[in-house]
Structures are given as structure tokens and as C-alpha cells.
Figure 1: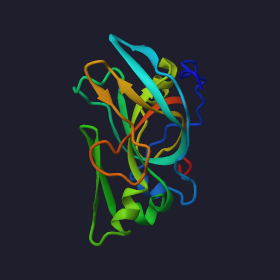
Figure 2: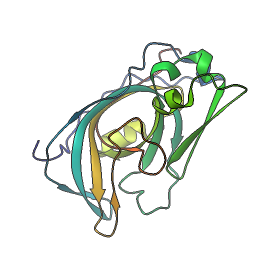
Figure 3: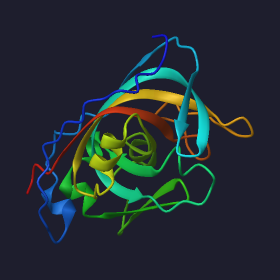
Figure 4: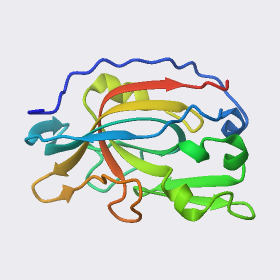
Length: 200
């Protein structure tokens, strides 16, 4: 792949419906989680509002996962390039019996999870099936499609994990689901997105 694809077709299968507790609507077995393939690429210079950024694709990435938290309130200088964060859960976390014991908090580019009572799963299992994604949009249409995404939606995303170079600042994507803390988030250049609420 020589450069990132900026053009994208946005697909959606989403109908807005209110519900009291999104955890009760989650259906086991639907969130298969990330699949990634390494790529060799050259940096692509793109403009995001008033911000110019160089993006280097590290891996092709696609995932189907449950949205468990969302944040778009940033003042870190990266908000034009990465305007939306979504925390995603998959695999054993995609189960209402597990999720009903948990709560999630996403702020300042970090996601955390808490449990009522005993942990439902081993800590390592939880952390390997929960990750925050900094979303970089390949088109305004995709950004508009996801700007009101909410917890409880099953989200399909496809694109590339990228490193970002702003000249004065660099952000590197995680390439592993096993890392933790600073640098453990996926920076995803989104080229396709599908939203749905299977349990509603």
C-alpha cells in the first residue's frame, strides 16, 4: 500500500432506539474482535481542519465489537485529527452477564473499567478484550456517521492503524491487544464503518 485511501463509502445498518440499560441488549457471540495484518507504507500528508498531519499506516485493521464508552471532549491539541474516542469490548466481554457487573469510564484518552463485587474474569482477560480507539476519519461522511455513536451499539470498523506526526508532536498506535497504559490505544484511520443494535 503506497498511501492511505482518503475516499470512503460509509455503510450503516443503524436504527436509533432508546433503552434503559444497554448491557441487557448485548448478544453473546457477535463481537469477534480485531484482526490485523502488517503493511508496508509511506507517510501520507493529510489536512484535518487547520491541522496538517503525516500518517504512516502500520497495519490493516478491522474489528466487530461492542461500544462501551465514548468521548469527544478534548483540548489536547489532537482533537482535529482524532476527534472521537470509542472504547470497544469483544470476545468474553461481549456477554450481558459479564457486562452487567461492570462500568466503564472514558476520559482524557484513557478507558477504565470497574466491577461490582468480584471480578467476572481474570484481569488479563479483561484488558486483552477491551481497548480505547482514537478515531481518525478518512471522510467527513464517516465522521458524521459516527458522531452520535453510543454504548450498546455493535460497531464494525475497518481501516489502518497509523502513527501520526504533527511535526512538533508524534502519536504512535498500539499494535498489540496485550499492552496497557500510555501508548496502548489503537489509532485507527477509519475507512469503513457499520453501526447496529442487534438486541433492540
